[in-house]
Amino acid sequence: MNTAELAEVGEKLHEALGKEYYLTYAGLKQEPEFGQIYDRFHVLLEEDALQAARRSDSATLLEWVVGVRVGRKVASLEEEQLVKERATVLRFDDQEVPLLRAAIELANSPDRDYRIALDNTRSREAAKVLNPIRLKRFELEHEEVCTLGYADYVTAMGELAGIDLYGLNAAAQAFLENTQDMFRESLSQLVRARVGVTLDQLLRSDSAWTFRADQYDAAFESHRMIETAIGQMSEMGLDAQQGGRVRFDTEEREGKQPRAFCVPVRVPEEVYLVIRPFGGHNDYRTFWHELGHAMHFSAPSRELPFAARWLGDNSVTEGFAMLWDHLTMNPVWLERYTDLSREDISNLAFELAVQELHLVRRYAAKLSYELSLHSGDFTNAASEYAATLSEATLFEYSEDDYLIDVDPGFYCARYLRAWQMEAQLASTLTERYDHDWFRNPEAGAVVRSLTEQGQATPADLLIQEVTDSELSFQPIIRRLETLLC
Ligand SMILES: [Zn+2]
Image (cartoon, rainbow, N blue to C red; front, side, top):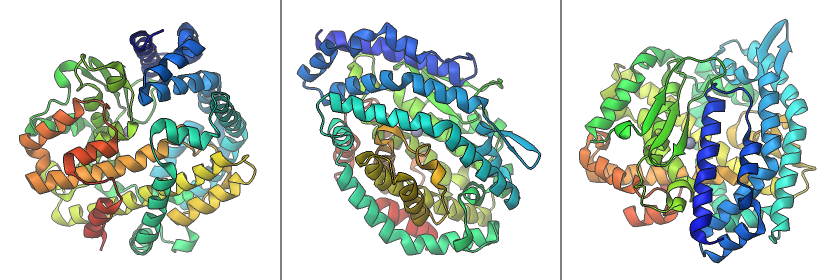
């Protein structure tokens, strides 16, 4: 097998997986059959494919072939998890809540006793049903990369991704340290107003409600969402639907995932953005995020190689998704695209900034925990998980979630790099095109030319090329300080 053949089969595999993902998660198909798809493309699992990737001198192709092998190993466990998640119903105090609805209920329930009862049942049941599957999954992942000759899982993931995971972790821990006081102060203000308890009484079941910002729902109506996005993008000289390549699936359908998602089926010609809008700021934020992915996947030319269109550093696509979703947190954007009063905008922007800081801190803690989880034999991981996450977020976490709350393959590192990329890019665009750069066709042209490269360039090099600076947490801190201090 040569590099061209590898890429040709690879593209067909991803088109098939993309289609299956779309159909299953959009509620158009009941039983997922990812395993069968991998079976059809078994040549990619053979030694020949691995050798071809090694010979190609492309770090991206090698990372991908290893990822496909791991993906095949865990495909049946992933299907089992999905089926069990759908079948699990939480029963407590005469109530019945499907497991997959728990997150929505937690975000929408002002009744603290109800949230605590629901979340206790959720974490206990999820641990019982899902932890054995997750444990098996991580064991298989470790085993697979070790048979390929890597010393251990952490080394393999860092080397294959070309990311210095320990260096990123050191910067993330410094971020936690540097933002500790700002977080304590701003969170206690928000918690006093919304939850009515002190910081030392906070539980994880309070977190979604703390950041729900429901008092502003009327300004974020679901029926205006797509129209607002199309309008704002056109002011930037961009087409949100990319000449029909981005397809919005907005129909109400049983079995459709409650959260919006984006999935490419052919790159760049066929990219789905699936939503089930309920209204509220979070819907807008999620929609703009997925639109960022959709506009990124539908931007590159067909002439670019498979690796640049489908593979590469996912920090980049997450970075473009965040560039768009962070617009909905920007006071200048809120003033232009909502009917909120100045006072409401400043209060909402404050709440969203506290949420942002909470999220980045949560991911900083996840990276440190996941490095430790994947370096050991899983025995003390549960208590370490609860301690690390609780300390960083100030919400008390349950040990039960120590395997469910883990993104396989250190995806948390891509998110952290995406946050860095977004903040640096937004700050450069603001410097060059002013505070309303998101309405400026010249800024739009810059973003378009970057997205047209797909993921040919990893986030650190992309930022260096465009802004002549390194990825760091500094631009995130600077922006948060203007909103929180
Ligand atoms: Zn994303």
